Amino acid sequence: MPKRSGFIRICLGAALGALLLLLSQSRIDHAQATSAISTPVATEASSVSTAEAPAPLYPLPIEMGGKWGYMDTTGKVVIPPQFDHARPFYGGLAEVSIDKQGAYIDPSGAVVIQPQFEDAADFHDGMAVVILKDKGGWGFIDTTGKFVIPLQQKYDNWHPFSEGLAAVNKGAYWGFIDKTGKVVIPLKYRWEGGDFHEGLAEVPVADTQGWGSIDEKGKVIIRGTSGDFSEGLSPWRDYSKEPAKFGYVDTTGKLVIQPQFDMAGSFSEGLAVVVVDLKSGYIDKTGAFVIQPQFSYADPFHDGLAAVWNKDESGNGPFYGKYSYVDTSGKVVIQPEANSPNPTNEKIETNPFDTGVAFNEGMAVIEVGQIGHYKYGYIDTTGKVIWEPSN
Image (cartoon, rainbow, N blue to C red; front, side, top):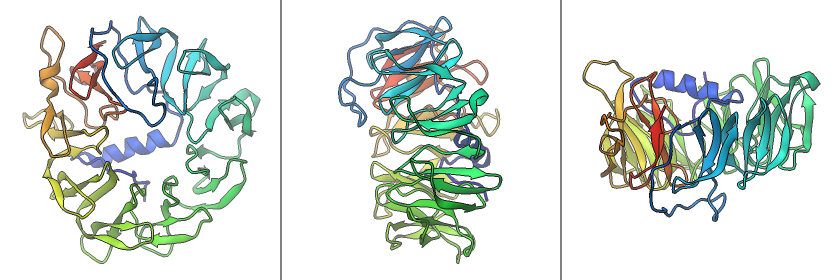
């Protein structure tokens, strides 16, 4: 019974997608979401909103000449390339590598936590995991660099903090700690569960066929949930049906949308991805289809757009296909092929398991080329290329 994602990425290779997601959540992952080695395309400033920092927007990581820096949403380099690698900003800070040691910078590029870590993760809920193996293992620091949970080797894996709690595991079992490092929900769950969202977390429940949602004290509040709560609702699985069908419950456990879908994801911007007969579409909070099932894969909505993917029917294999972007009416508003800036007019194609295609703060990554020979860049919500794809 592997962990399920809070949202469901649906495609014909769903099993592989779930495996990749599980691996990415179980360790500190320095595989960069995107990179570009080039010069920016001259563009006009675009208007993009962000909950993290209304103004200025956090810079976006880019690579030039083997070093990493950051650009703004117009493609202007605002922090010159100087780092061995660079992560996106989370909670006002970004993790970078200086002389092969992890450090943190602020949006001006100033180093606010000095390079010292063998490995380091993004900040979430004001805390970040860092590793100093030669000094005792891993621990959590706050945004000043102070160790709030001291270095230790007590646990094998961990999740970022969310709503004041973090999932940790030892051996085969998972539980939750608070920001002092105290175990507040015992390590008793045989499978990796979810993080806390809207006061509840999804975990395996021993006295049911599957999963349920617990509160911050570990009490089972709802049985049968099948994903994270988002916008007041969570997917819920009805095991009485054969095969089982998915609907939605609210945070009290009340069934709001009747079980009728083959798979279901969490709500984002008022819509949720569901699957019927191997095709993905979008429903609203009444359960009505807003966009009929028609895609091999569909992403949640971000910034009013969602990446959708359809399998390549030319015989290249089940994991080949093309992305486009649709608005909340289902209208295709960005056709990647039409936005290729390359003189060879290469089509933008992508692996369906890549996680960098969703819009975030008004920007999305594009991949140009074929697997193993990708070029990366950024587009805005109009489809305009902000950073030209390059090797």
